[in-house]
Length: 419
Image (cartoon, rainbow, N blue to C red; front, side, top):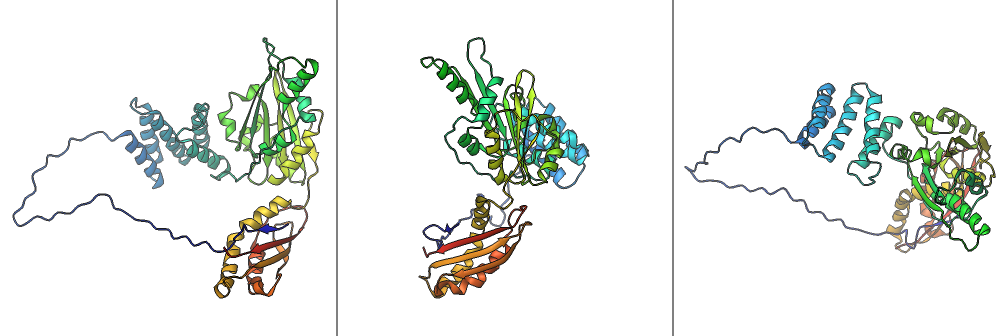
């Protein structure tokens, strides 16, 4: 696999200039005998809602009385002058106070209720903070793992055909297909494989039975990249085809939502720990089923979904799926490309003495099952870049890859050219 660092891994010099301005501030010195006019003291006034919320938050930051902070926030929430935005911000502070007081369940429920209340509003002001807070409460981490998305035109899979029986026409003869997917950011694989293209399967069947008839299938697919979407979408889950993606690289769904899954999260983790992928499904009365696609690593979800797409029946009993035991190409590329900034100083040192230096460095190494690099070599294809071999080797030996069942041998040439 070859990674070419664009047309110019070389140097791009950017000078960032910033001007700092202090808030308007003027100083006037008076002469001898000047006296300032007397000023009447302003009448005492009630602090604003925003200030009251800020004070409660700062009190929690300083480790002060959480009970008092909660009482202050409760008063804000009862205040008829508080705006919707004020109430949202106050609820997040309330959640913090409850957590400090030892009521973690209350802290979680407060945020869940807040998110549920904005189910129809995707752009509300406190959305990002609410998601971070719920993620931190349930996983210990605020940030959602970075994911990728590559759209593709969907075919109709065997599995999509098997799902058509769960979608009956309404009294007007229309079929309505709504798919909700949570986690994994696997819209690319689903579209490429047509795994859940039930609408396409229904349309094909109608066209086959009546080529001149107009298709009445209505479809809607919504993909939430995080499990937090479960909270937002609770009203739609009972009537939708629901798909959960699960991996052990930050894609776990908290046990709090086990009732939504085909299997308890503890069982999912135990099965994935054996090094295989997993598909499972749960049928629901008068509703489409719930589907689970799980893999030990994020990059392997495609492999598991490919197996599911080829199934002609719902896997109501969990099915183990064989997955590659070594790292996937995309996993290696992603990690090595993430180290490019660490390679840069190696090249810059060469450019100082030879501004036109260019060529290729061949990285040859093994990734052990625990993700460590061993047996590494960095060899230049010419004398020009030989001075940077030791530096490149040092950087490569510090790279850490995802863990896998077996070691992976990597040959990775990198081309260096000045800008």
